[in-house]
Structure formats: C-alpha cells, structure tokens
Image 1 (cartoon, helix red, strand yellow):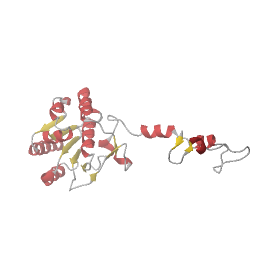
Image 2 (tube, helix red, strand yellow):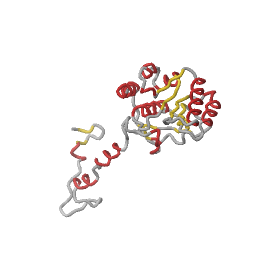
Image 3 (tube, rainbow, N blue to C red):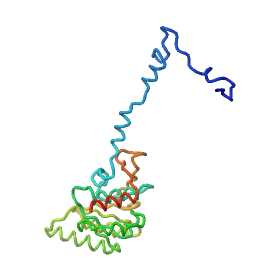
Image 4 (cartoon, one colour):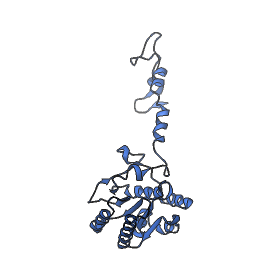
Length: 224
C-alpha cells in the first residue's frame, strides 16, 4: 500500500531486524522483546476496576458522609445523593430511618418519587410534603430518644435554600444523637463535598458508582 503523503510504500517504513549480536538502544535484543517488556499489565487494570464498588457495595454513608452534616455539590451531586439514599434503604446494616420531602425525593429520582413512596421499607422511609413537617417529626423523635426510647440512625435528605438556618437549628437540636444530614447544594453551616463517579476520580474519598434512576428504583423494589 502506498503512503499518499510521501509516495513511499509501507514496507519502506518497517523496522529492520538488528544484525546478529547487535542490541537495540533500549537494551533489548529484538523489537519483540522490547514490546513484551512494555506490554500493559492487565492484572493492574483489573485490580483498579475491582476498587470501584458496585451500587449496593458502597459505603457512602459511613466513609464519605462525615462529618454527619454535609452539602453535596457539583455536577454529580444528585447522582451521589440518590446512591446514598438507595444505600440507606438497601444495604446499610444499621437499617436507618430515612427522612425527606416529596420535593427532594423528586429531585433525586427525576420526578419519579411516587415509585419510591409506593414501597414502605418496613416503615423506615418517611416522606413529608413540607419541610416544616420534617422539622416537627425530627424534633419529636429527638425528644423520644432523650426520654429513653431506642431508635436507629436517622438519615435526612434536604435542600437548604432559604431554610438553611431552620435546618441548622434542627441539627443543633439533635446534638449528641445519631443524625446524618445530607444536603443538595452548598451547605453554609458546614463542609461541602464535590463527589465524582469512579471512572473520573479526583480524590479517592470521592469515588462512587453512579446508577441510572431506573436501576435505583429497581434496587429499591427488589429489597422491599
């Protein structure tokens, strides 16, 4: 085949074998030995892939959601929050209570909150119409815990917006109790995380596996 740019055949460009006893500048006797030495280590690539957990193997609420209240911001915030929501109801061995509003559930599941609410999750999922109802529920639950009633970890998903101060007061009301509060967007009263999916990490602590809304709903349905 002729190289149109230079008018020379491909054979002209083929590397010639070294003369007997001659070593390549790289220190290898033949091109084949050089290529074999520089062949990618497939075991390494497989090992890297194994470090990225599947959707139900993640531990976002234990390993990333610290301290216990944090803003989740950036382009992948919604994906991370949805993954954390599924983790809380499907694979977290603490069997936490999960609290949010229908509005926030619609944000996480792209308008398909009704498909999530349809499953009771053994009364562990509490979805309210308004933030005021969430605050009242959380304050009453904190009072019950302080009076001696046992309760599991509580995971709260919310969007602060103009209600950041009200939300912060509720968190302070839970001081010393087991509450994880995760917020969609920047959180003015605490740290903020900018998670990245596993195929484009920036920091190891930010790794997580994304999953489509349909797969998230399917996981929830299977676990109920």
